[in-house]
Image (cartoon, rainbow, N blue to C red; front, side, top):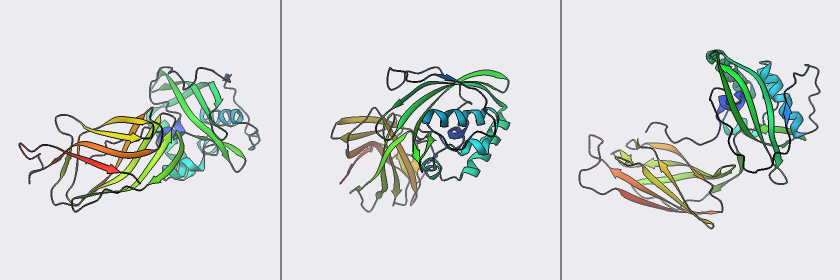
Length: 281
């Protein structure tokens, strides 16, 4: 199966680049109140490494980004983000620099459009960016979390507020679900897990219509489509499902539209797709 199940969170490059490669319109923030507004002002290299506030960290990060000081920009990214994307700060900074060079990205200015408390630990910020990509003017919007690591405010583009492991009880001679995790994010709930096919024939996920995932929590039921793909014979895939606006504690996951296949990898003619129910403990 090709990697089509994307966690709707920034990856290593966009997490440091400020998503400047994508054109974006100003989107409504999770709240209606704008707490802080600021225009970028380039800072000297002698700026203190100690940040007194979340706003200071945002300004220091974007000032470094505008000056293409990639390694210094990485100093203001959370270790949680580097752990999540399985990258060191040095590797991420290098990827950031290579992306800028490849796409001829020139960031020109930024503005803190919103900065507010989410809970006792996290802050939310929205940043408007003006840039040129391959010579063309581009407006972009960054959204981020901020929290303290070792007493300093750090930027985190993953959008993850909390995460926990889930015990899934589904497993038989044909397939198995393991390493199940639930991420509570700015946009809802994301489930991540390993789906193993233990048979000698491929599993077709979705066909003429996409497969559907339905997650039940103690707060309601939420749905997400799964793009069409295959799980190879005796193979496994990491699956990431994002349920917008979902909340609560996950109780079970139902996946509809899974087809058994013939030797040539096509769904067996006339056989109805399977529905899988995965209870969570």
